Length: 290
Image (cartoon, rainbow, N blue to C red; front, top):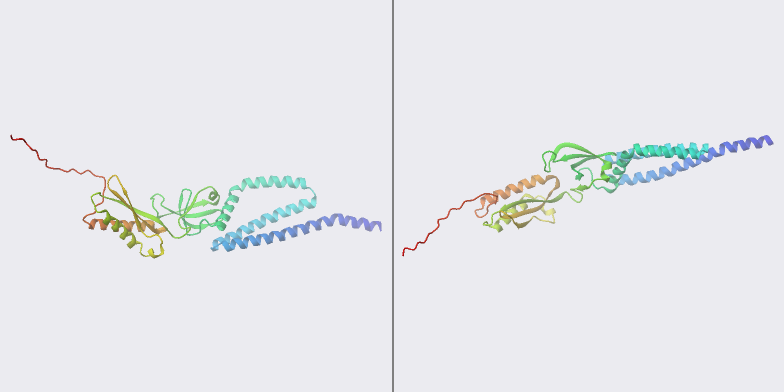
């Protein structure tokens, strides 16, 4: 009878901690899976592209692998009973991992911010820091931007692709041309002489703005309008109008051409520009013949 008690005591001493550890690990793993599935489902509802969904799947797998490794380590040290060594090991491991993966982890956090908050999406024209262009891809680590301007300036695609690390999204200002809609305010400015017909110049500018934007003018609450200012060489006329964000130069060029043609055809409107004009006048001299 004594021998059986010794055997049962030995079994209790060896297997009960093991069973307890296994139960705790299984429960922790189940709870983690439930939470991860809920988060993954939320992110998938916010995602709009297949690339976003693929990134969510990859990210969830990475998190699952990391959690599994940490859980196994906790289980081993719990069963062994050496929590002091475990705490020291985890502390050193976490510090080393955090230092080595600081940028990648911040990049993943930046990607989550893009998926959840949506400061921009694929196809948007943005400015991130000093990079301007159209977003063509968003990955776990980088945002791919089809650059506009570049060495030529302006708003046309240069053909170069710039990769912006997601970690930079927390450090740089982000400007989205097309967050609310696909249109933005643009202007064409010119100067007419003081001697010219200002009302006609304003009408030429407004007609040009309406004619060139008529394909989408009905969608705009803000119609083309004109401001005028006194300038050093004449009256500054500034036509402002809504234009597709990705076609700014196209419309400004077309409007400039129509305004120039209209002024050239008008007899009482002239474009002012810095130049020197010499005017010769005959001076009448009165002499006293008396």
